[in-house]
Image 1: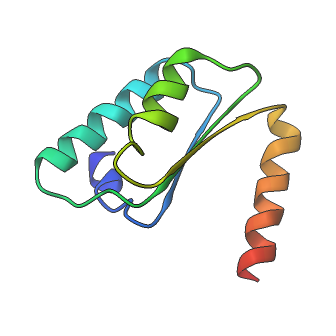
Image 2 (image 1 turned 30 degrees about the vertical axis):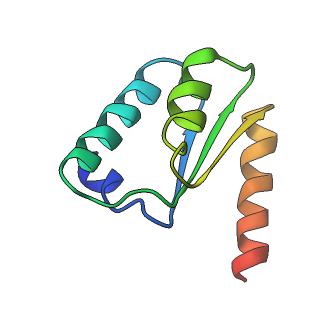
Length: 94
């Protein structure tokens, strides 16, 4: 997982529906690769869940993008939101 996070520069990380474990693992992996000298500053994070939880907003949206990048928190049903995101990506890259 950390090797994937090390290549996140210019990319996007989606946290879909994990309120505890993955936000912690993501922040720890990001801290690890930054401490090893990888430049991971300009990327986008998205937390998506049915309700807004403290940990994912802090560890996925706010802390990782503090020095650069953008973080978004989307609240809604996954079966609606994921197809909308996919359609938007296809439209923009298309």
